[in-house]
Amino acid sequence: MAERYVGDSRTIILCVVAANADMATQEGLRMARRIDPKGIRTVGVITKIDIMDRGTNAKRAIMN
Image (cartoon, rainbow, N blue to C red; front, side, top):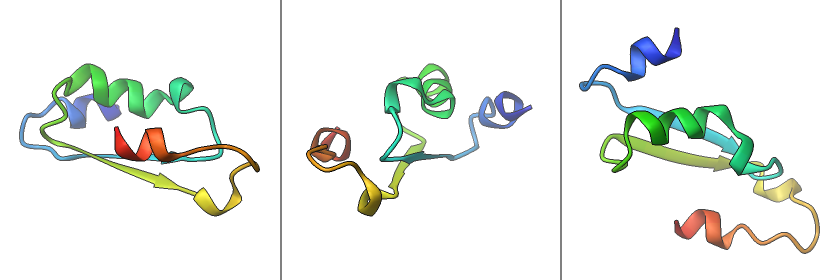
């Protein structure tokens, strides 16, 4: 159902991902990359940075 909505070229994709989860396994992020590979209409939001594990670095995810 979600693919039907984000497949429309007039839709802005808001991809919300928790920082304390593995971003490589997030289905929403994979879908956004597949449907909008250039990232022209995708806005990424990283949440829960305050509860990340000690020693984990979110800089790469934020800067990319």
